[in-house]
Length: 269
Image 1 (cartoon, helix red, strand yellow):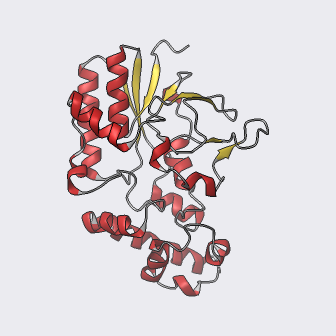
Image 2 (tube, helix red, strand yellow; image 1 turned 90 degrees about the horizontal axis):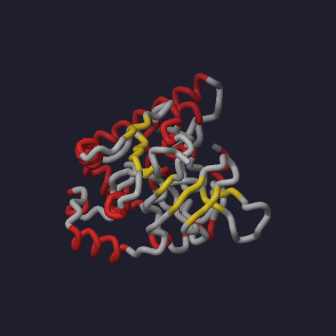
């Protein structure tokens, strides 16, 4: 067992804020770990930094884990941006094993009710539990109908406990109000989820809301599409009809038509 106790993996969004409060309230030994993605909402970044300082003031250990490759460099390396079917960013920015976690049991704020049906439609990030049909384990920082309150990851021997697995949105907000947990101000602006800006798992309307709120991130996405087009031409790769300009490629990437299955353009990429 890790002498530091549980490793609380937190983004400081509403669920992980509740998780942290439960851990402190329970009085169990734990420490906090945050994965820096470089594409989180700025307000959430400042909120997380302030909270981590408070945790340190209370005597808890905190760790900020920096990515090995930025989102933009990663996309250029892959020659594409992540889609619903191909989300290499999660593995690189959030799910990769962090030495700072050591052998501690990881505690996460994932909830079954966050995404009731979406995990039934894909399995690209699943680890099959020794061939037991229907008992697949989803990689960290994801959500699944099959997620269990306590789970064993057979790929890298990580043990995880998910105390909020059966909590609903109403449970989260009711608890936050009852015990006075301060949540990120972005929830008061109409945001219901605080993840990476432009995440393909969000619907188009939500992503457009994000890009209106943070236009510099949209500009960076467009620059990255432009760099990828330059890379394709330099390598002698074909420039696809649906993505002959950064704006066209961005528009295709932003739409919802790949929600259920990969289309021909994804397969070509």
